[in-house]
Image (cartoon, rainbow, N blue to C red):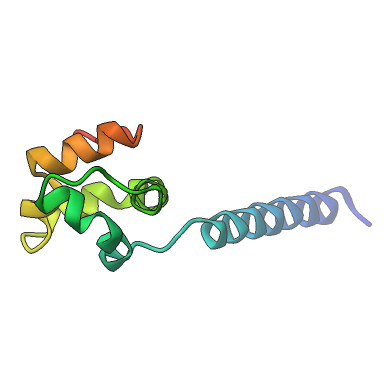
Length: 97
């Protein structure tokens, strides 16, 4: 095999490995679905403390918060003082979007 062909194969192999790693990482991340936060509704809209399930869902959906805040339908709930309080109680960092 010539040097040029070997270099091309190395580049192709590296690209394939990176693509597979990216697909695997994307599959491991939870999909953004605001319905997943429904266990937190009582804590966000009232004065109930967040449940373990709520905290778990907040941590799972944390990468999605900025997308939810940008959505005018979800923003009043996600960006409310109670939602920030619930997130703090659960130990979830609230993003500055």
